Image 1 (cartoon, rainbow, N blue to C red):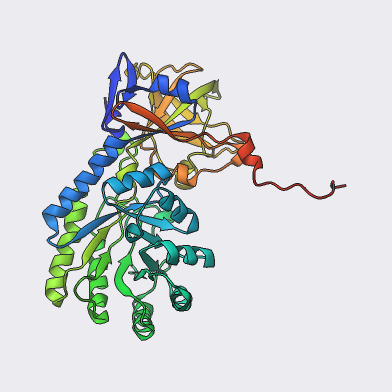
Image 2 (cartoon, rainbow, N blue to C red):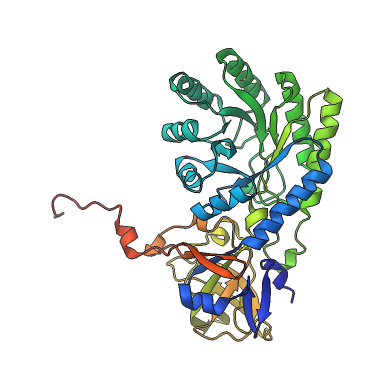
Length: 436
């Protein structure tokens, strides 16, 4: 089946029903309710193993993998990162708190952010092993905090804006000259001198060119530029270098096969080795940030079809979730695929649009996809739902965020309960007097 490779590694069809990690998806939907998000541990384990194998084959020095908390982070997910000794990239105080709750060690906690608040910086200084500094103003704030810090101060990496973007959606490009992220070469060297003058623990460089790209070629000139600056800055033995991440995945069967991560790792590693040899620069501790390519295919979203509408020459399958739990189509026009949970091999006899219950015409999950004759009450499974969906979810129209279930060796464990109406009211404070 052409769509099945989009699903997690443990996906099978048993008794004419989709199953993941030995768990019948109909049973899971009925047990936990829908919308429901499933995460298959085996798929994530396999992705990490593939990255580690590629690094072992292509990079002769020390290398580490950083999991992008922004893709999806929960206490259980943070616990899982520890089983692979992954670093965890956190953006701000909230993600730092979740990582700490999951037991992520200080030395594996790295903090990013283009506009870190005072509270973000305080949490980073208190709990993180590394802070990636985005701009000079932030560096000055950290210098002030370093004088007040009684604990070990985190290592600092400087974020370069290389002026080179990868081929992806404009909203997910980050390395171009007009980007809000990072410092140009002149600012970065000023930051280097400032760190040396103030005795700050500068230990590395970082850049990021964009997310969800499939061609690694634009990384080569950016890596070369960064290493030229590293030479000028006088980095030597034991220094750290991260060329970011954002390697893409196939969300739709038209985009298969999945992009080869080995090509991505090989280009980065080869460019670093060649450039360091040319510059007589010590090989750095390499950090890659695979982002969604670790977690996207591990996640599946289950929805129930509440209404089937056929009008104006179009068929709508209206389900019980949508842009509140997955805004990616509304934001980027992201394309997804889908299978019915029961009878996934049924003949696909019509083109349909799959949309949610929210009061927006943009509340669409999938446009114009071939499906069988789907009836109200059926469950649908949308693969490639593990990244940048729950982490971007919200409460529009009073939506409650869905439950999340962890699938591991034939077991299904609830790791995030479904939000309740009481949760929506928890932050509210009534006025002292009734409004007129």
